[in-house]
Amino acid sequence: MNETHYRFPPAAAYALNRCLYALKSDDAFRARFLADAKAAMAEHGLDAEAQAALLAADRDALVARGTGAFEYF
Image 1: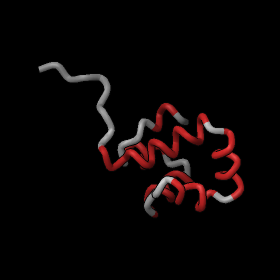
Image 2: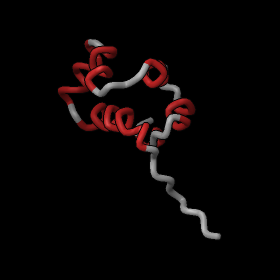
Image 3: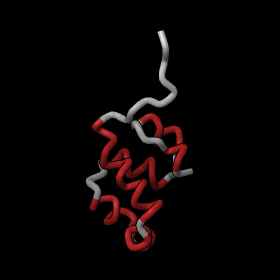
Image 4: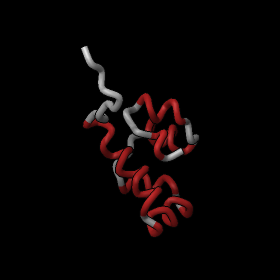
């Protein structure tokens, strides 16, 4: 059986992945995040666990939540 090298993220990780992508690619969102991270994360509907993992830059926790965090850190 062939295993793929890339596993698609679960649908539950969509908001977190969008937030990470916005941090990487959207200067205005990144500025909002730096000014008030909790408010910026709320824009993307992140739950408390996702917010904690992102604030801690906890790569392992982010990957466990279904992100492609290796692309961001």
